[in-house]
Length: 512
Ligand code: AHR
Image (tube, rainbow, N blue to C red):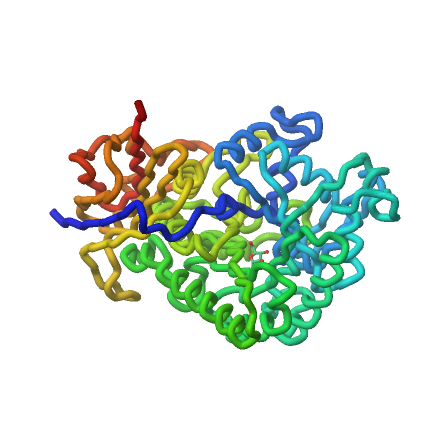
């Protein structure tokens, strides 16, 4: 039996968790909006046309913030197209995804929907085809109390109170050649600075996210970060990171044809490196500019993405809501998503916002059938568990795990684990992936400074076949279940994690 050991101490804390690390993202892309969240003739549609079955599935995830309206879409978007009477809204050619945008849903409707799922909106502005002027008008429309052209227009549209949108993205992936209005680092840095200044002049309470690299493989990474931050350090609050694991290209693992699960499940190690490099770059610019304030990270797109690449090549352009980027996730993807979210939380001292990209139909944990059911993809479950139970602070673990080498990585720990502690609730949650595809793993967790804790729940997500997922015909094919393989003696917990599994153990101390 393979064994691992983890030592934790109540006093050794990485950081308080900012709940916005459990954010997500919805873009006007494919069927995310239309037949995703919005389908007026669906049997479960509410008075605004929003699917109530989808609302329930999203609410369960407890997503506190949702990035909107893009993504690549935002770089060609005129936000004015989506406000005012629906019948007067234009249909537009949408160039990022070569679709037709009907504009039936715009900013106001999306904000209404976000309230229904107990979330706030993180708004991205168009710095591709537009700039300072449309950004200032949008902030005025959304956040100014009244008595001016755009704030009064909002009132005329039925929203007397300002939307008070707190977090704003200064464009999207502006380093990417594919982006409408792609820019060089110094061009973007200059523009972002000037836009940031006017936006904060209108509403000094907002927080701004400047675009970092679209991924660690971008040829301009990390010079992009350095140059952009040298222009914007004092006027922004976060820099964005985007990372999709296993996109076709170098290091692509074509599961299940190429069954290199050992490398696949270690891909969060690249994400870890990416985060560390960005933190170093931020801090380098801080030193160069003699700044006191820190810039934190908004990891506002992350996920696994590879299943839909081939089938998307056959989709006809210029359709309304074509089924693009619809991933049929398999069990192995869920484990990697679990490892990725643990990676984000390990950096909770610098990552304050993160967005699982995306939420409905597009690279999503939730899939809808037009006129039919909404169901949970495999990746729904690790996100659900950690967003619900990963509260309070992240503890700094000393992990001693057996390791392995794979085709792409060396020294990969078999155990990937994360532990959170919620002082108010007297509860500890531990999350773990056993990366070993063949053997169970026995782990000893030593909780220094914690006495009297009992296991209240243990959940495992496992599958005899790592290549299957949930489908409309069989939506509950791979679901987590409860087990009990733990024993606690004082402050030492011993627990068995089945081979190739995602695990949650919840402990609580009952007072009095
Ligand atoms: O999430 C899908 C796309 O991936 C987004 O539009 C873009 O920002 C990224 O490249």
